[in-house]
Length: 388
Image 1 (cartoon, rainbow, N blue to C red):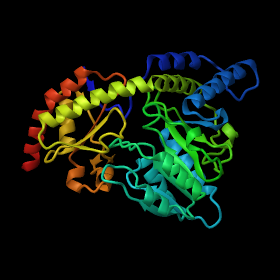
Image 2: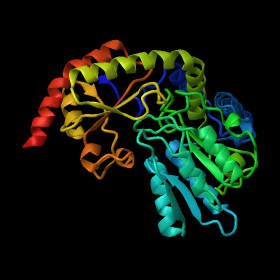
Image 3: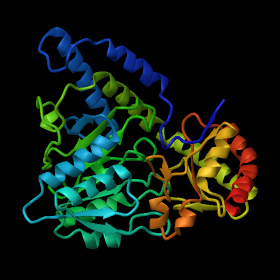
Image 4: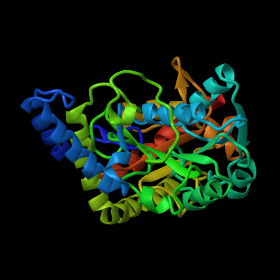
C-alpha cells in the first residue's frame, strides 16, 4: 500500500463527488439545448454553479467553469491583458508563482509586448506587500497566489487586494492550492467592487477531492476580461463551448464538503503536520522547515535536507512505497532547482535539496510514522550519493 504524501499535487476523489459525477453523467442533454433533456442538464449545471458560488462566497453568475486551474489562470491573465486600458503595458508578477502563471506571463512578454514588474519574496516565501504595492501604479494587471503551492506560505491577500484596489489595477488571485484548505471568500476580498482590486480568482476541483479536469474562474460581474476561446457564447461569452455538467456537479459537491469540514480538518492536519515536522527534525539533524512556520497551509511541510538531492530522496522513498514531491519543476524530464526556494534567497544547491510533504483528507498518523521510519536511511543514502 502506498503512503501518499503528495496531496498538494492531487488528492483522492471523494466518494460523494464520484457518485455525483456518475449520476450527472447520465444526463444525456446538452445544457444549451431547449428540449427537455437539455433543460434537465441546464438545471444540473446551474445548481452546481450556485453551490460552488456559495462555497467560494461569490454570486453564481461570477462562476465560469473551466477545465482546471491552468485554464483558469490563462483565461484570467490573458483575458485581463487583452482588455487592459490604453497605455497600460505592465504585469505585476511576484516571484515564486505557479508555472501556469509564470509561463502565461512569459508568453505575453514574448508575443504581446507585456512588460514584467517582478516582486520579491520574503525569506519565508511570502509576497512582500510593500514591493507589491510599489509595482502597481499604471500596471495593466497584477496576479498573486493565495498560498504558495510549494512551501505553503499563506499570503496577506486581503492587503494585496486593497493595494490593487487603491491603485485601480485589476488583480487575479490563484486560489487553486488554497481553496478548501484555508478560508477563501471572493466577496470579502472585494470590499470595494470596481475595475481595480480583485476581479478574478482561479479554482480547481482535484485539489480538494473533486475530479481532475474540472475547474472554475470566479470573474466579477463588472470585470473587463476578454475570452481566449471563441464559439457559442456560453458562460457570459468568457468560456464558450459545451459545459462539462458532470464535472461541474462533482466539483460543487467536493467544494461544499471541503468548506464545511475546513475548520476541523485544518486542525487535524496541523496536528499531523507538526508531528511530521517534529519527527523529521529529530530523525534528520540539520533538516530545515521552509516557509512560514505558522502562516502556512495546514497540510504542508516543505523541508530542506542539506547534502541530499531531493530527486534522489523521492526515488528512494518511492521504493519504500512512500509518495512525496520535490516541489520543483520538471520539464521534459529534467529536474530543475525550485524557483520558489531560490526566490526565498536560497542557493541553487539548496533548491535541489528539498521535499514537499503534503497531507490531506486521507492522511493518518500511520502515514507520518511510515515516512519517519524510512526517512533517515533514505537521507543517509542520498547524502552518500551526492558526496561521490
